[in-house]
Image (cartoon, rainbow, N blue to C red):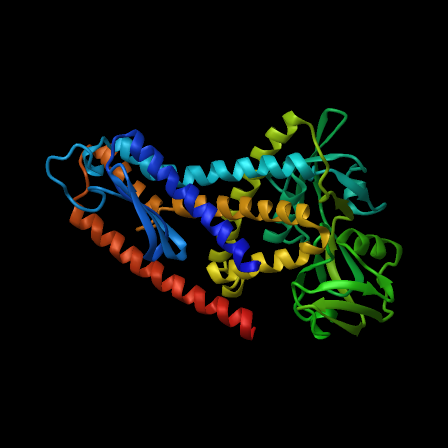
Amino acid sequence: MNILFAVIIFGLLILIHEFGHFLIAKKNGVYVTEFSLGMGPRLFSFVKGETRYALKLLPFGGSCMMLGEDEEVENDPRAFHAKSVWSRIAIVAAGPIFNFILAIILAIVVIGFVGIDKPTVLSVEKGMPMYEAGLREGDIIVKYDGSGISVGREIYLEEIVDPVTNEEIEVVYERDGKRYTVDVTPAKVSRHLIGMSYSSQGEAVLSAVTEGSALKKAGLEAGDIIKSMDGNAIASGSELAAYFEENPVTDEPIVIAYERDGKETKVTVTPTMTESYSLGWNYNLYREKVGAFETIKYSFLDFKYEVKSVFKSLGMLFTGKVTKDDIAGPVGIVDMIGDTYEETKSDGWFYVFMTMANLTVLLSANLGVMNLLPIPALDGGRLVFLFIEAVTRKPVPKDKEAIVHLIGMILLMALMVFILFNDIFRIFFG
C-alpha cells in the first residue's frame, strides 16, 4: 500500500508537470514527438496523431520530447527552436506553473474539508514578555519577526529557522479590526524538559527529538508514536498537549510508552533542567473550517506558505542549519509517504486521503520551485538562456548551451546518487 501511494503521488506530480509543457507546446504548434510517464524502457505505448504516448518502467520521471528542442532542425516551422522566444519561455515555464496550479487546487480540497490553522493566540502566560507587551488570547498574529503571517504554521516555521533567543522580536497583531505593533524581548527561563516536538494533528507522532535530551538518551526518535504517559493512554497529539497542560513537567521521572514499527516499548525518562528563552505564549496550529470565500483565499495563502518553506529550507541548507540527513530524495520521500500512511490509517480512509492530499500540496510546490531555480538542465536553467535571448535578441549558441546543460546534468545525477545512498543508509542503518 505504501508503494502504491508513492507511485500515485509521484505519477500525478510528474504527469501534471509534463502535461504543462505538452499543452502549451501544442498550443504553440510545436511537434511533440513523445509524451511519457516514467523513465527507462517502455512498458507499452501508442501513437495518436503525431505523438507517441508511453508508460515506462521506472516511475520517477517523465518527458515531453519536442522536435528541435536540443538540436537544430532545418525548415520545419513546428520545431521548438523555430518558435518565438516568448513562446519557448511559456512552454518551458508551463511545467512548474502547472505544479503550482495542482498545489492550489489540492489546497482548496484540503481546506474545504478540514479548514485552516488561523494564526490566533491561544494563551498568554502572565508576567511573560508577550503578556507584558499587551497580547491576549484571541489576538491574530499578522507579522512575526518581519515575516508576514497568514497561517499558524508560518510562526512555527519562523521559530524553526530562527529559534527564539534574547534578540528582540517585532510582532504585529490584530484585535477588533485594529493593528498593533510591539517589540518583545524573550525572557530567559529555566524549566524541566524531556526534549520533544510532536504533531498536533492525528496520532502523537514525534516530529523531532532534541539531541542530548532525556528522550534521546532513552532511545526515542522522530517518527515514534507516544501511546501513554504515566499510564494515561494518549490517542492523539491534542490529547498529549492536554496531558502536559494538566501535568506540567517537573523533575519526577515519567513512564512513557511509545510505538515504533508496530512494536510498543516502555521507558522511564527523567526530565532535565534546561535554560532557554521564551515569549510565554501558545498560538494556534489546529485547523478549523471556513466559508467558501475564505477557502479560496486561504488556498493561495497556504500555497504561499509552502513556497516560503522551500526557500527558508534552502537558506538553512546553505547556512549549515540543516545537514545531509535532513535532505530526502525519491527513496526518502517514499519512506515518508509510507510513514504518513501508517500514522493515519487507523483514523480511516478520509483522513488518509486528506493527509496524502496535503502532502502532495507540499511536494508539488517543492517540485515547482526547484524546477524554476536557475540550475543548468532544469527548467529554470533553460529559462536563463531564453531570457538572455529575449534581452539580447540573439540566441546563445546551441553547442555552448548544450555543454552547460550537460555539466549541470552530470552534477545533478551525482547529487541524486549521493541522496539515494544517503536515504538508504538513513532508513536502513541510521
